[in-house]
Amino acid sequence: MKSSIRTFVLAAFAAASLTAFPHFASAESFAVSVEYLSHTLPQGGLASVNVMTLPNAGTYIIGGQESALAYSTTEAQPVYCYTSTQAGGSTPLVDGPASWTTIQAPGGYVTIPLNGYYVATAPTNIWVVCRYYGQGVVTTFNGTITATQVK
Image 1 (cartoon, rainbow, N blue to C red):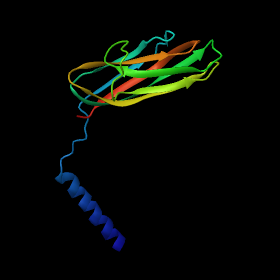
Image 2: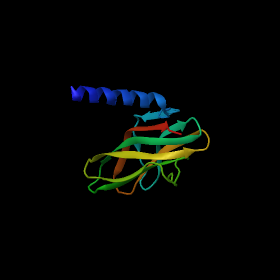
Image 3: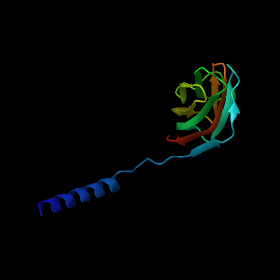
Image 4: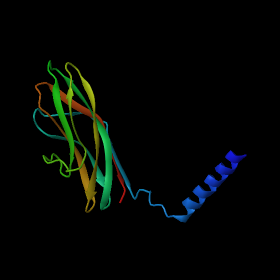
């Protein structure tokens, strides 16, 4: 009986608390881009492999991933993917998604995580740019990037 009363009181308190205070947890906008096509990365060069448009000014939480495959190589291949506001941009976003990884040879496969945030001052394109520094061939595919506006 004591347990039932305690449960009732806690439930009543929670209900009163939820209705008494405003909640601001909703997202203002959501953007997504999925790129299924494969992109062969130029050796030592940059390749823009995906792009997403942020529709409003504000703070966005960005998340996503890029898949990469190395072939015709006998050595591990270092790969770096990041986000930029320019196609083929060589300067990553300061707090934007960026990841280094190494694809093991031969025929190794990795999923590169892309998580971070960005504060847009106007509608903006966010590009996913990748590069590798090895001797073989690296291809990216099935990349996804999303952004949820939180402020």
